[in-house]
Length: 80
Image (cartoon, rainbow, N blue to C red):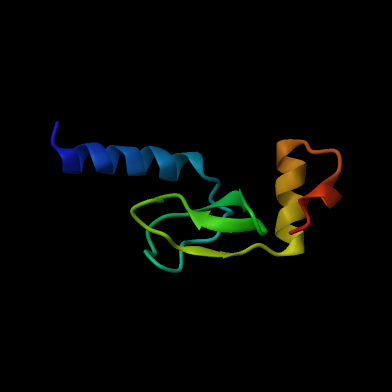
């Protein structure tokens, strides 16, 4: 399998595992964003990372939705 085909299959798997309600990446415009937690709190990061480094801030409503999706009891712990 060529490297390009392997990379495309990995991207397809990543794209299929991300809910379609997540925002589209503003940088590559191909992939959905995934919720990430960094040193400064929660943010949206491109699911094609490290090939695409698109990122954007996550609103309080998005943080609460992700907390409910993951089953966190204390969404207040997601402040960021």
